[in-house]
Length: 93
Image 1 (spheres, rainbow, N blue to C red):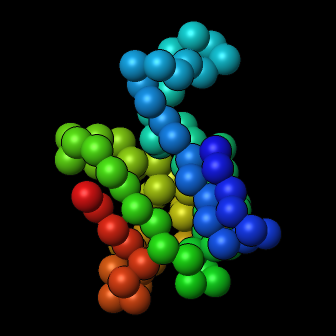
Image 2: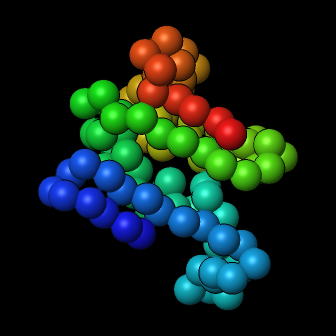
């Protein structure tokens, strides 16, 4: 995790070849998202952008995790994702 300024930039990494969860399983992006769910949604609601970099094959797990995160907060993920895309907050590289 890297932060610049008070709340200007936050970068969280999930490198499955190098990082592991406490239970010994590989650490993936969806684990980081779930662990930081409340902060993530708060930042997105405030206009922050989210960038996913890596293989497109990782997106199904990420989308599933975000759907669970939104559902737990009483939000419709499909609607929120559309909103984030329309607002240019959602980026996949």
